Structures are given as C-alpha cells and as structure tokens.
Image (tube, rainbow, N blue to C red; front, top):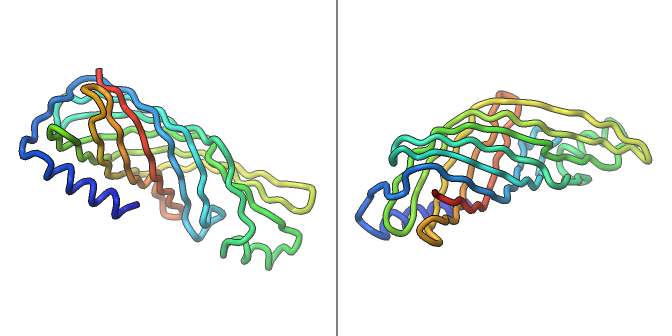
Length: 193
C-alpha cells in the first residue's frame, strides 16, 4: 500500500505543472480505516476496522487545519500471532485475544500541493486513542481498556471526483508513544464547500 501511495503521489504531481490552491474553505469527510498495532503488544498483527469522520478548513495550500474522530466497528480476534503464542506459554488456558478500537480523536496541520487533477497532502498533529483488549480463557473473559495519546502524522493523495468531491487514500501513524505504535491505511471521500 505504501508503494501505491508513493506512485500516486508522483503521478499527482506530474499530472499538471500548475500548482495552485483552487479548493479553499471548509470541508467534511467520511472514510473507512484499518488500524494496525505494534508487534510487541496485544495488537500484534491486528487489523481493526474503524469509521472516520473529518472536518477542516483550508486557508491556502500551506495553511489548513483538520479534526478527525473515529469509531471502531468490529474487533479483530487473534489466536496465532507471536504475542499470543508467547502469552499462551505463560497461561495455557488462554484461547483467544480480541482487539478493537473503541474511539479516537485527532487534530492536524494539513499542508497540500494541488494541481488540476489531484492533491498530495501531509498530516502533522496529535491523536488520542482508546482501545479494548479482551482475553478469552475458556468460557470467561477479561477486558482491559487502554488509552494513549501522542504525535500523529501521515501522507495522503487525493483525486478530484467532481468540482467539490474528492477521493483520498492515505497512510498515517495514528498514535506514537514509547511503548505503542498504531498505523492506519484509509480510503476517504471529502466534500469541499
């Protein structure tokens, strides 16, 4: 997916030599997000789907702000990752680990390079993420809620569908701390007013 985004970014910038910000003002968006976690944690090999809503304002190509909220839509079950196998060695009754995004919120500075066909944009900001881990042991379970916050950054490519509607694909580090790292791949639509 990173190769796809890199190739799309190069094509977007080469599509037209005119780089002018022709999409100023407010916008709203909705997207499907896949959140993955760090291999040293219960989120090893996790693929946790979420629905994301965004709203922002572009003053010009270098000055824009955006807020996002996300809600988990399903959990991801694990019974084979390296983390699970290690945990099961210490607790033989452990049969499965469920991981899911509860919710998240983020705020970003969003600079963009825009031409007549597409846009390349960066995201630099801060995110707060709430997750839930459920450890299944036979018929019983134990649930742990985790909350973390930290720096968040990413890169995206957007294509114009109509004069006001855009389709975006992006990669993002959702939350980065010393102990955890959560990454996202997302597909989104946004509408520019």
